[in-house]
Image (cartoon, rainbow, N blue to C red; front, top):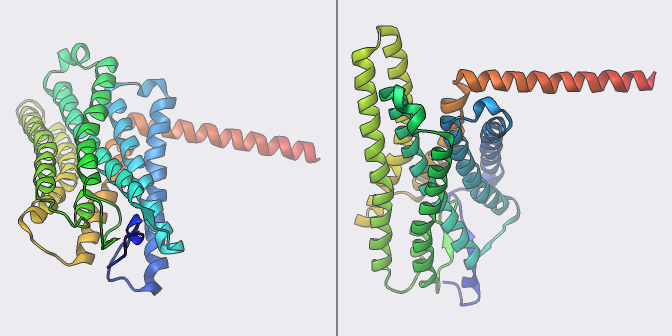
Length: 324
């Protein structure tokens, strides 16, 4: 048990069973994950902002998703890497802030996935009315609403957990400060906090997920009836790929929240590994699935790359001429 002054410091343990000699390899894997996310999501955001031909509803939604994913990785991965490298700790207010941002950005992801499914529904099922219903302005406002509404539930968790600070144990056996981890540190009765946050979590997960499943079922059914075999197979593959990504986002979270609510206990290292899988892998996969397989974005990326390459060659030739 820590004394009262130590409680002001929160220690992120990471993988509880990890031996010290494995700190560097594991932290390097995390660094690679962060760099991959930075490259993939940063490229998507840059291309969508830079190229006017990508100023379209679907790409605006994708850019918002990439922004949320990149921010999530930035507020979590460098912190746990610094812990493994330098033994960095956190204050309780810093932990609360990270908890707020973690739940805020996860909730934003959930709402943006729903917005993406709605956009695809109108694009495929109502193509003649799509441009009149889904405009850049409508999508921009919708994305803004997603960010604002997501902050409300995250702020609720922040306020409730701030009323139950840790008074003894100050070690969090995972990679980041989450509502479940912070609540476990409190000495007072937190049953109300757990029930309230669980209700909010289920609402955040199931309401968007219901829209997503309904949208894609309708899309697949319409494509199956109206399209030829080749287009049907291509569209079915695209839809199922999107659904797989969203399943990875939603299913583990529902399982973890439900298991915590009913009191199921699992191996701590396995919990952290699952957290890594559903938190970070989708953030790298999303740009590939939604963007790099998209012809408009790949063509834009090629033109961007060729332009940078030409500038580099021209600068090299200029420097060579000056040297001579």
